[in-house]
Image (cartoon, rainbow, N blue to C red):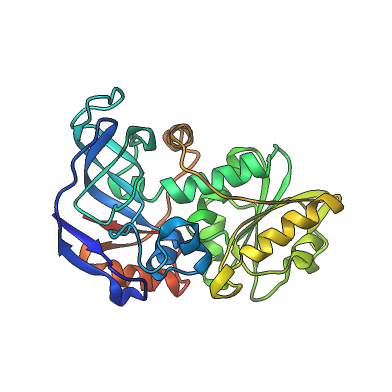
Length: 323
């Protein structure tokens, strides 16, 4: 089968489209024929091996342990392991596993759910990582409540477009922060208010927010806290600055250290794939409350181009690879 493989860390130049052996399903696994796969920031970090903290965390010190890139996937079950009970060959599924930039993948049945009836494979592939990150940030760390004022920084990106829709589904009044060219998109997915960060500073307005999601941001804690209510909650969901060693993790650590000494709740999110979250998202999608926002699609051989487009920060919603 064909797959996108890398032997070393680096830029998109390390990615190669190669023929490799087709995987074999273990006892608890699904073998899935991939129809589409999503692109997210995590793929870029695993490709580059940055920040270095990621390598120390078990992904491979000198070279990536998992050589085939990609995490999110949607396709049809080709075969099932002997212990699999929830799926059978032919089922359309979506979920997460290692090595999804390939024609076939294997993954534990607990990391998959059935594709919502109203989605294409391309739309379904856009959901898993970004949507459950948004869900866990709002529900688990943010403890969002109906009627709250919620500010979403990075509202037009992969996670942000899901966060806006989910916050509305939870009954919040939502303000999205994005650049000039993306304001119409953020309004179209349900944001009650939109702030163009090139023209206005959300922390300098009279508004104060019960919950702020900072998605892959770089603003200081003091800047973010100025926009919170006295007992509001800030959830830091990644970061794209902070050097080659920590890459923004130091800001998350500072938030955790400061939180016990202030009235505001300062939290960080380390999202984890959960089948129950995929199922909850599928129900919201089938109910019409959440719709994946797709920007561009690329072929498997164009994965380097897709990652370069993502890195430039132009994406409006999700980038998807069709296989």
